[in-house]
Length: 292
Image 1 (cartoon, rainbow, N blue to C red):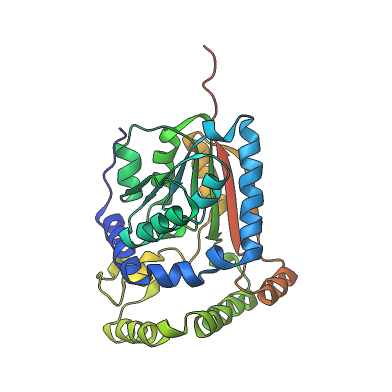
Image 2 (image 1 turned 180 degrees about the vertical axis):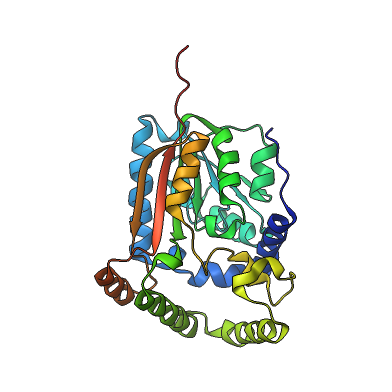
């Protein structure tokens, strides 16, 4: 077990995720781009295939943790490839969707309903592979959670993160505008039934003086749960600083890729012309102990 004392801010954000997905689990699984877009899915599968090959052994001997794995976007792909998979997530509703999908596919679902920091600090299990897919931006303290993950990895184990936003302050104004317009279009076309509720939540935050740029001041409520759950979405994540922090923890960087990742192909092509990178993914290794 690893020492873990989450701050009140961390706990508030974790609880915001639990509350938000209590109502949004089905909508998220049916419409979110990182789950439904075929192009994105093929790219994810290619990454997973490459990572599995790096172990140089039979997939069934590889023990994987899908951290904050939700409805199993990654877990189902790993199970299909024969890995021994545990999925941990804070949302009972997302886990129920995962269990139904496993039953439909003939897989035995091993899942744990837990906040990921608590799970990593309390479990005695060790893993060869830990995946955070579309997860880091939901964590108030990313570096601390990934440090906990480091201690749950076997020597030469791998940690893979994907579908997280780069720092928005590093993007050009044109790129930020394109991303905003794309999000509004996505809500209109693919999450139409959530538009009235989303508008009411935004109005409630506006009238109560709650700002996405000052989340630490926000009280958790129905109106703020989604905003707090997507904790780093507005500002993004400084992935270059994160890489340096994780290097100090002990991780070795296998790859760090930055790219334009958008909901629509047209937006991606336009942003690629600006030279901006809107998303990043990391593959990190826990090195083997040095011989004495």
